[in-house]
Image (cartoon, rainbow, N blue to C red; front, side, top):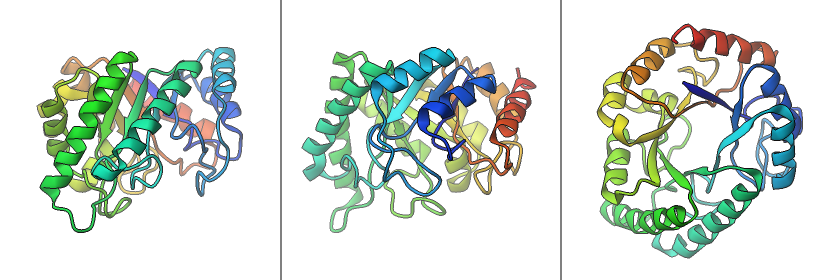
Length: 272
């Protein structure tokens, strides 16, 4: 399994390039991050725009690859909402900007969010809006040798008005678009909160899943801290033939983030 660490969630007292080096010191060879024009500091992403050349240099020095970044914010306030037809031009322009940035820093994948529910618009219309925009986005991604991951989030704890909170609907949308450059991101943390039956839902949709996110439930802390058995989840994913990424997007409860990451790596290695 190819594990990567979301650099937004760990070592938040340090600049993003230093975080990369610290993650590498914990034994990981891949990272992912959220926005190119902001860095999470434990409170928000309002500051800390990233520089593509600095990212590339930091990764080269640490022997680390960037697995993915994020196109737009979950609510659509940054980069537009897929479910809003009026945001289509904004979203596609943002995607072009992200792909250009990614090319410089050596990244070939990005997560895309649906945006929040739109007042006065039916779910059917929002779904049509999203599929139209995603179809265009997938075509643009294909031209650039890029892959998009459509993410489902929970609407009970973290993203109350988010449109896509069902892995079944997410998989159906990916299948409807039918592009090899659009895959589903299955976030185990979010989907445990929304629907449970993690193993059954993963196995049913593994053919369209291109990436995983993980965190403990409840709390979004270390993977072993909570109601999920991530070792068994990893074993079953591997048994299904999955060979792509598995992202660690958790906020350490342990004060020593390096110790937390090393312990997580050891915990997951026991599933190998």
